[in-house]
Image (cartoon, rainbow, N blue to C red; front, side):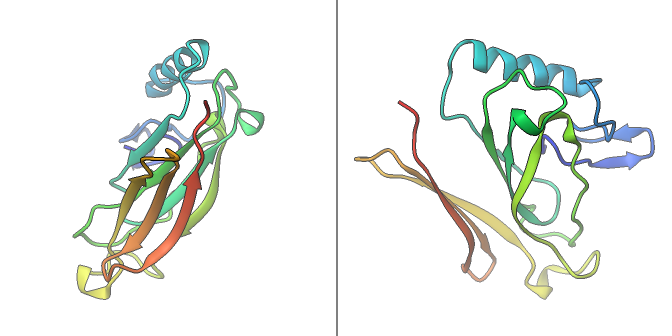
Length: 154
């Protein structure tokens, strides 16, 4: 499930991490805050999140300088999927962890069928020599919609 996207079941229930509050971590955000703080405290680098289940595709960069909760190192999240379902989105972003949209491809209308061609997936490749991770967000025709090279911290 996405980290900063608000995925609401109803006004008081949320499927993912974000709770649409935007303040200090609450609910499921508490577990994520503890995990992100642990990663930072242990100097674990090159953390990337691959998430799904929002019926469009997006690249988010999480920056503690733009977050309500800031005890974490910056990281990327790439969202795509599901691969064969009606379209929805985009979702609102909860600022607790400072997500920034770097790319998103969303439907012009909701609940379009898979035959509309708005199905998405991601592809990750890591170069064996340079260790650069290339993440591509793609559509069902195989076209690359967005690509970014992530140079590892050493």
